[in-house]
Length: 464
Ligand SMILES: [Zn+2]
Image 1 (cartoon, rainbow, N blue to C red):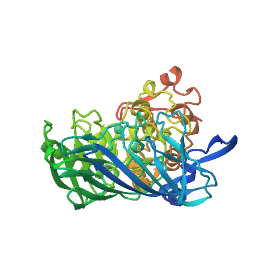
Image 2 (image 1 turned 180 degrees about the vertical axis):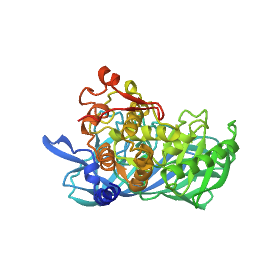
Image 3 (image 1 turned 60 degrees about the vertical axis):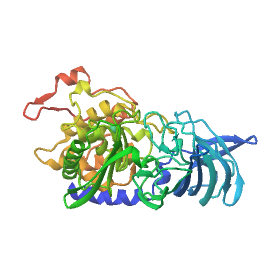
Image 4 (image 1 turned 135 degrees about the vertical axis):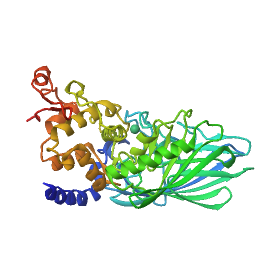
């Protein structure tokens, strides 16, 4: 079974490298000049964002250049909350039209020029209004964070033109602050190079998507930082913590815990999968407790959970909102030893992966229904004392094999099926897709369960 697993996985990975169109949302039908047309979610390849914080004008201007790939002839879709101007597509002027996909984002736009299949370049400009978190201009200073919130649908499109999570692309920020009287610091999960005082270039890894980027600029004098290196299984991981100067948080104790957590996750889920880790320690910030790739905003209590997301959610990344329940289920599992509540009465039907094709937000059912179902499943599928066949064993190998890829609920289900050699279609239809009512976990089946007190686990039959 183990060998088969690897062979299958090799095939799966090979397939998934080229599988972006399959992970993209379906095409969107719209009418233009009384003609029915098709719009497509395109795959971004690179994006360069030239961002200027103009302190005198209290304005943040962005000039973007995006290279994207269209899978078919049609009208490209991109995301931007603010109104763009001066749109140039492949050297020709164009315009865009907002569409409402009823997913809470309200930022999708169709470019009103049809393109052929293949590579294209879009240039555009906009001013960041900060629909989710506004840039704060002070006396000669700027404090601006491109913070996100995965439950409300506020992602990077609240600040920059971007696309959905299925697309992984290389982003570059050229940042400058003009009219400033003081020096500023940039905190990001990319590689930042300071070109001169208040001018930087930040390059983000190619595997990042729209939910990966962490970016925060604020005056140097307003922050306290703590740098250290964690060595985990031979890998050196630079870690930086920072907080606002007035914050009461104790960075020393958070650093001690974080070092232990990185070592624990390395042991359990394999090598820490990024170049570094950055944490904005904030108990009072209204945006606290949000994960990014190799970065977070968190208080001391949620730090371990948010670090776990650098494996599950922002290491292995959901391709859409219907797959984001996996992030919360697995980060909860990782940070809370023992996982969820496997008792059958706590395993409840849910449609957390079936909320419409354009869904981008995370379903909170992942925290409870998601982890309870997976914990219950893991206990039923354990093979004797073989740790490989536990949920823990699955996650260790899964995290290494799928790291830096986007996945869907179907990918996850297929990987579980391959690993355990079972068919989970009926169970997923009930507990994950909410398509049918549960049969196996009704009162009678609960009565007939055999309980193994030694391992505190319930033996359930898989649905056939
Ligand atoms: Zn979380």
